[in-house]
Length: 317
Ligand code: PEP
Ligand code: MG
Image 1 (cartoon, helix red, strand yellow):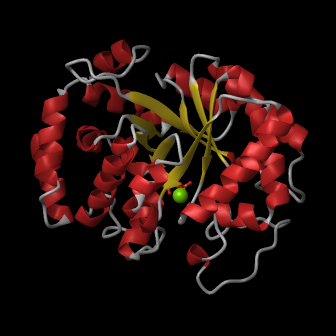
Image 2: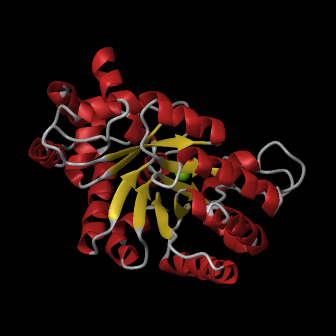
Image 3: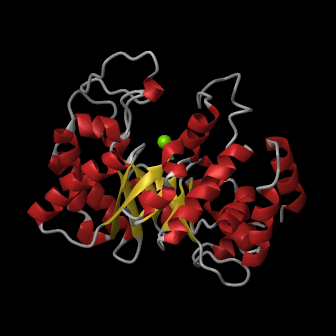
């Protein structure tokens, strides 16, 4: 297996019948970007920009941020995709210099894009910094925790203004699908974005109403729950109607056993943790697309998480 993985490492990911699936990485900074390429990532499907904002007393300036985003983009180069997610704080990720009101339910409060729209100054600064990286990679900007079309339109309007003022064109715009309303309304969202990336960590938490870090619920809060899988399938169907692509950047994309299932549902990009990239690519190379489709069809009929897991174990290659 090791030999197989290393032989595939610098090849494009494909199913055994040659269907292209992009296997990209979840990263935090330029060091990660370089490591991801060595491990065989074809690009970056999720740059978690929080690292620039963490562990400090003041918000990072536009220049400071631009330096980092440009370093990541340069590490990838103009042929590789870079998806930068705008700041995703609140809930589980508080910041000292951006005091948010104390909330009874922070996971249901000011999080993700809601913080960006509450503090447009911070969002605008970040967007300008990200746009500076446009010349160095295939730049994609992604908004987290989108729950309504209004939020998307507001965020897109802000981005359009900053793009116009900087004269930056050709930037793709997408959203994280991690709130059930967005999965259910995928078809309507698909008209207004270039791509989706499914955040299975939060999607699982919100579909099942189970805190993603809850110690006693860890086993049940499983992205392979049939209810979560149904939401992923819906997202893919909505996207397909408008010719948009769907990626997965939550933890499920790093699970090699889930890869053929996700591809069978219509996912064409898997953004995985760096260490799991070789095994995800190797697994894909053992499945034909029609086999992935059949697997998805069979699994989407299962009634329990245990049945899903059993079927995946039985069919694993
Ligand atoms: C997710 O929710 O699945 C995701 C990728 O975002 P994060 O884990 O950073 O919340
Ligand atoms: Mg998330």
